[in-house]
Image 1 (tube, helix red, strand yellow):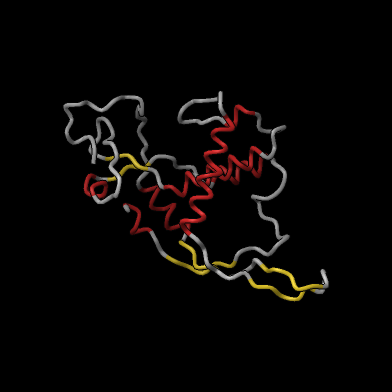
Image 2 (cartoon, helix red, strand yellow):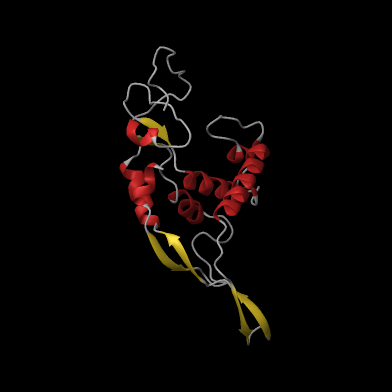
Length: 187
């Protein structure tokens, strides 16, 4: 994977049940900004050498010697944000739930359904086996699950640094069919 060099691991303690972050709660301009800040970069570009090592082929960017990719983590975050928005129809109508790539506002719930499945596939693929522990809670007067376990995580800053360095800055037309004469358009 082209971003393999960006992967560094760190221990991270997840939040306790009931501890809210800027991503929690009813939608506000602030929560929207927090969610949108997680995936500011959509499309990245990689060299031919990097693209040639990938399991799947990708197209060359027209008029450029680089190839187009996006890191799936940003698609996953987009999908989770879309599911979040679907929970609040009074703030986000169907126009917010359509597919921005396909410019398809007619089937917003197909897009949400796609996203639910993407999240499911990624949870199963990554299968975090960190144990959640159970401890006595004086407040609840029972043994209660604790989700503030220490996880081994990929360093988020390292990944966002990589994606910012590889960001596709020039506009390109994804609807422009690669030339059949261009034998180097796919890797």
